[in-house]
Every structure is written in structure tokens, then in C-alpha cells.
Image 1: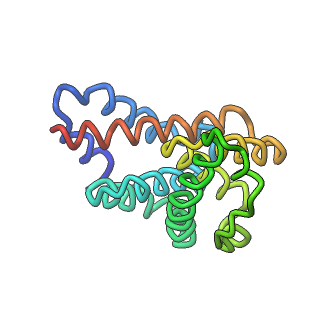
Image 2 (image 1 turned 90 degrees about the vertical axis):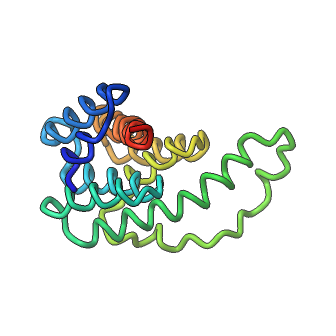
Amino acid sequence: MSIADYRKQFGEHGKDMSLNLSNLFGNVATSGLTPGQFYGTALSLAYSLEDKTLIDAMEAEAQEHVEENVFAAAKLAATLMAMNNIYYRFVHLASDKQFAKLPAGLRMNGMANPGVDKVDFELYSLAVSALNGCGMCIDSHVAVLVKHNVSAQAIQASIKLAAVINGAKTAYALS
């Protein structure tokens, strides 16, 4: 199943999500993202949402555009952000700031060598962090991306993917 097939399943309530998916996936070249960044971000979001139908559609869509290392890096981003976003969201939201001073002690060695360019992995991680609502992680990933001269358009595109893919999952589930 492709993204086009996936969005055809939406009911009337999902019309906007269908149009948004079509617009995003039909305009990858003008998104400000490379194909590896675009499809890697989309894959990391699908993996994070843990929806088999969405994952299958996203993998089918990405298959012709990226190499296998992008699939592995997207899974790594989804997995590490599932852990980090919970931990750092707690640190950020806890009224007692002593927790921010304690070492996290969480293994995340995969971030040092994710199998794709560091900027690409940061974009994947940013989108998943936005999906998971971790402000502290969002700030950290944006700072790294800005330091590496990633455009505001590319950063916004990764967040638009997060928003639309999350909405599409809901539209599909309600169909």
C-alpha cells in the first residue's frame, strides 16, 4: 500500500489530511529537505506512531527513494526518542529542578553513529520529539540544526510532516 492508497481510505472527516499528505509527498523537491531527510523523517514518525498499516505505506513509499541505512536510522530515532522524550520531558516539566542536575545515565550510543548524516538524524529526532511533545528535546535539536545552517523551511517541513502524519493516522483509524 502506498501513501496514495492509504489516504484513499480516509472518510470525509479525513479530507484535509488526504490533501495535506498529497501536498507533502507530491512536493518533496520543494520542501527544503533532501529525499533522505524527507523520507527518513516520515519513516521515523510512522515507526513512532506504531501503526502497522501506516508503517507499511511509509516503507513502500520510501523504498524507491532511499537506501536501507535510512530505514535503520529512522528506527533508531524512533526508539531513542521514545526513551529520551519521556525522560527529558519529565526533567523539563518537574517543578523540582534537582532532577535537571542529575546525570541521565541512559544509554544512547546510537546517536553518535546513526548510520546517516548527523543533520539528517537530527531532523528525524526533531520531528519525533515534536510528535511526543518534548520541549526540551525540541530546543536541543533545533539548536543543533541551526548551528549546522539548516534552513527554517527544512525545520518547518519536518514538523509539518509530524503534524500531518499524526493527523493522517487518526483519519485512517476513524475511517
